[in-house]
Length: 417
Image (tube, rainbow, N blue to C red; front, side, top):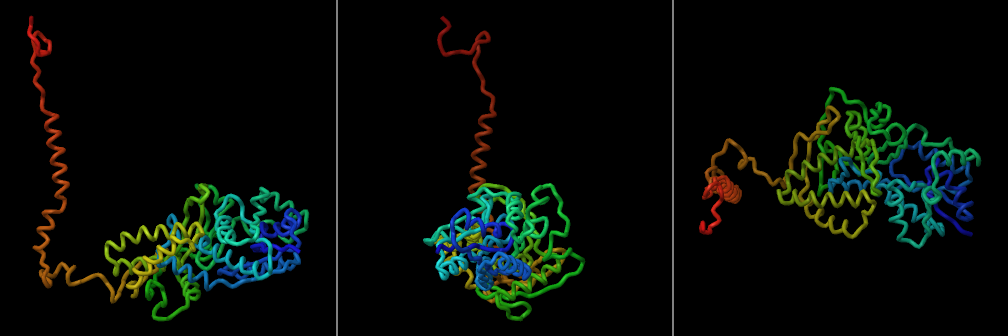
């Protein structure tokens, strides 16, 4: 008997995949796997109810802790893509790994997903699954299915779905972010109403300050209270979200080259990324900060692609880990006006001397203000030389050339014979 494990949400796409995997691909049995990376409880209820109606063996895997750990690695890498924190992208490899484990344990011959051929998730899932010997199946992509066709098919088969995500938009929620797309949001010129938001309230004139403690680049406490990663992220999502922190409306360039509009909510991610980068600014040298920007950009790119286990990422994390040895201290964040703004920072590893930097000190140790005179003289020296050469050439070219003439003709150097 052949068996396939399906990434199952209970929505339209994955529900129609169940009979299609049997009818079109010849599998004897389909099992559904739902992976918990911080979705609302209602989504698990929907998946369970749909699986029961389909008489589908259904497995639920709790991967919140693994996902939270990866998100905090993203904090150490200041990981954002085109201006927003990576949420869905980081969740997909975690989900794919959990499904593959279930598929292996249940002696499956294949793994399947309900992703379309136009999105990123197909690539992220399959990057994990194609390391195995299992058949990888993508019915929606391979059969060229449209949402309209799926709705008609579901009605014809009497499948327990009403043809969508329960609203006008396609919504993906996990511990780190909530994404909203589709319908009117596909028009870049459409101004969405506030009803698309669920995690964030409209900003008010109120404000609040919190102190976040970091150890080796990892956030570990808020206002002195220690938290495990999952609880810390959940707490900040609620607190920062109440001040309207973490909304992004972006035209995103997908891996396949398509440009799409995405709306995101990410209160905890925004808060932690702002705080972490602020602490790095205090403890890292200028050279480290400049080079780490390149490292961070590459980490975020691989994270967006769902390739967080690539050899390059291991190498990048070697550099990141070395710099994070000193990223220990506290950052005070003020929530106001929809922003999480750093207003103070402190660390025993600060690469900073208030005594040396102060405008009120004349001489500190062996350094005095007048010592900068020599530096000032040499600063821009090559620029002055280069500009001087160019000015000399311009002057030479602007001088008039006197031409010897004879009867209005230029003298060509020959005799007048």
